[in-house]
Structures are given as C-alpha cells and as structure tokens.
Image 1 (cartoon, rainbow, N blue to C red):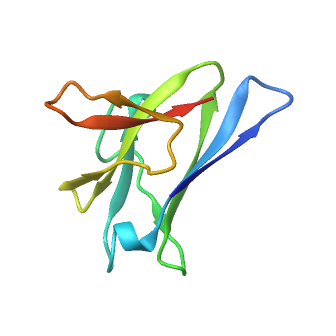
Image 2 (tube, rainbow, N blue to C red):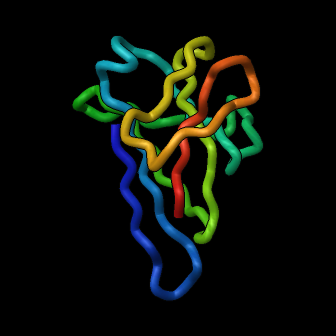
Length: 102
C-alpha cells in the first residue's frame, strides 16, 4: 500500500493518491475508500482496479489536516493502509483507523 502526496503551488490542496495492492483484495473485488473526507460514506469513493490488480483513487484534500480512513473490500472487510502516516483509535472496540496527514 502506499500514499502519494502532491502539494499544489496555487491552492492549499494536496492531491493524495491512495493505492491498495492486489494481494489485499484478490480476485475481482470492489474496493471503496472511506474516511473523514467523505463522512464515512461507504459508497462515496470507489477505487479503480488497475491492470496490475491494484486499486487506486486520487483525492484533493485541504492541507493542514489529518484524515482518518480505511479501505472497504466487497462491502464487508475493513483494511488499514500499511503505509499510513499513523493510526488512531476508531472508537469501535480495539480497531484503529489509518491516518493521512497533509
């Protein structure tokens, strides 16, 4: 997994690319990015499956904030980003959310 950030010079935004490897979602899975930036709406941000089998989506996020997020695979399995900037308690048992800091 990886997070790539590209800060814009003309606006206080960062283009953040989220990538989930094929090994985390084998087969022809559906993967959504869910987090603070979309009010934890499980259907709001679908990820595109690449030829490599990886899943990818890019968002414009305002800088100066930390965003909690997770990947939702096939509407049932939650996965953290192993290369996240950090982790924070989710408030649901012992689960943690991934963090991206921009």
